[in-house]
Image (cartoon, one colour):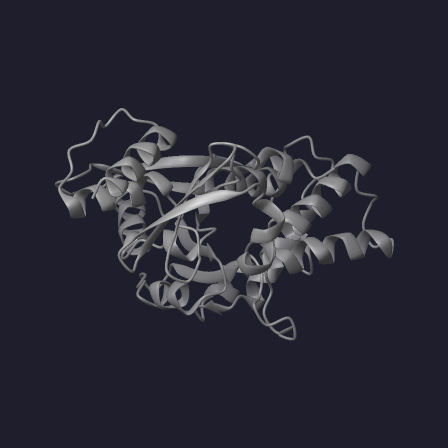
Length: 313
């Protein structure tokens, strides 16, 4: 049994929020997973071999970890999900960081280092300038709070040129830093860059070779299930996740709506890649056609309604 596959069936989904929560859970040394700070150390040391990073990242990491040993006690490490920051835009006034790793001063509790992780599980979820906007919101909050913490922006995405291009648009202040890491590598022969897949596999290999304490059996099976289901290229995962016959209807060159027998609605692009936000894709179709639709519709209801409208064209 694969719990991640089971949860993805029907109207369920393993999405960015789920994966952010799962990764944040593993990285938090104060959680009940039984790993302590072992995975956190693996994550931090692996940033040295990120797909792309700023040159000063190594200097920042030296203040946190040395020879795989953290310089902070677990009680001084905080993991926060969906932290909101103020932004100055007409269409919205806040943005949310998927999750943060914060290292605090043991004496006064002030923040010394903050890693802000923006997670994308699908290429189509990339939002132009989102990373820059979030960074500026975080440094504005730092200024308002008169905090001297150093900020590291982490862009966690699929291995894609589009994601890399978006990361490369980010500019940070000289004492802050950034890195681009991927869930997996599309080049299986590329061993020079570390991915989340590599990190989990390396953790399990260390356990097998008795370099770390035994991983609790339930967690070990969960990690294997996660690797099998999620941390591999989308093209090889789709046939494993999607079951049941579907009917589809195309809209122009950019959208194909699929409805499965179990009621699940999907929207894919002309290359068969899933859109990260199905409801947003459906709304885009409505906006292009200037259709007035009920804003309280669920994704399933909106999908059915759009399909009906397209059939009637």
